[in-house]
Length: 604
Ligand code: F6R
Image 1 (cartoon, protein in one colour):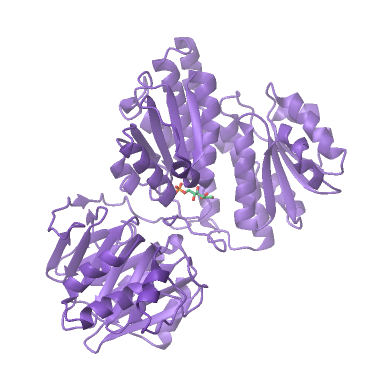
Image 2: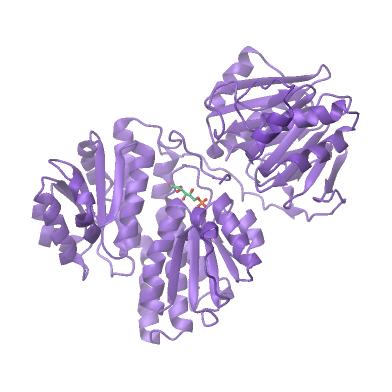
């Protein structure tokens, strides 16, 4: 969370810092700020809300210089107001920070002679460094000493009001990259931030800190020893944040891109004749369990995959929420493969779980959309999603790409483990090849779903029900609806409802039932009857056969393309994505940047 950009060079920096911040707005948009060094000290501009507000502030009161740091905030400590917006200043020091300083209360107590002007954890960093400078240390010494006092997670950009144009940077737990320029150096939370500035990047490693100046850079490890880190050259175009094109929102564009993106994913794992080298990096005969760890939407992809791997390949799967995983002392076996699933590849909890498994000697894989991400670099095996940049904060195309990759790997596992015969494998791969068409057809339900969404929009609560692999799709439907329309929604396994939640069903409460016509259909219909009998308004997402069999019981029916059981979760997902989107637009919410959210969750 929070995005950081920095530039130190010879040309003016403010406009370029703002450009970098705009690319990082997906990491948070509670407030934004910029600080520059311009020969007459440190100057800053800050604004509450999105970067557009900072641009307005800068228009009224411009600042510029040859060195600057900038920040877009997702609030952790302290309200999202202008006072808590970064950069934070203390004496000669200005700081931008992504992460959480866990011992900030202790540090505040230690520095009890100092005046703190914000409610943030970050401000202590500026005070600690300023104190160190006052004790006579050089900026470099003061920075190194400051880092030793901090506990928690940080990516830092710091400037000091002295005679030198320098930016001090450090990374512990939160990602940070250095960009190399010609007579300039850059700092950014990720490659996207630096896309317009540099293609030659150095990803700082855990505990690294660096000093950037127009002349170049120095990197030190956590023991203050000078170190060399590899320079990664980012391919041209790889980081282009695409525009919205003909679509009103990024989310809608990304929903409609899915026929293409699922194909791009599929190609990474399945060639014309066989599984690809990328897929074969995993030997499913060498393991007896998959441990899939992820957060939010990505964890629901893992939950769907559990059905696939267990049913198709006979391979046991545990799915765990990353934020819980390492704290419950999981019993791990060396015969397991740990798979982190993550769009960003930077989610703090998922990354921590990956490191936990690596430390325990468990083989690790990371299924990620950003192949330059920390997870891709740290896992034993990096597996791509190839969904292209996902800008909408609510994940859509990355989710279907996660599903596509995991479905294909489940078939590979079945083949390697001889869980089904060659005929069976051929049938499943044939179905995978038809996926893009099925997704295209599913998208044609958009207008019908928009009508249904008009009826759903006034609701205060909604329930999503599914059975089997449709259960995680129900979870995902509920998550999408709540995060962008702010309607309270819960997903349940249809059979679980009567064990408590059915108490919430009353007249006209919307219940979205996801039930393609499979072997569990009749059971789901029974659960549908149970809620209908209590006055629920049923919206049935199904296929043609399901609509014939049970359409009469529903207030509205959405008929998605008929598939085999295997691909039904992917196709039904399109329906719930469109439902969330159209409901949110009917309510006029900020679809691409919903309140309180950030796309990349880099704090615990
Ligand atoms: C919901 C959503 C989140 C992410 C979660 C994990 O629409 O996008 O629930 O899925 O924060 O993020 P990644 O996949 O980047 O690890």
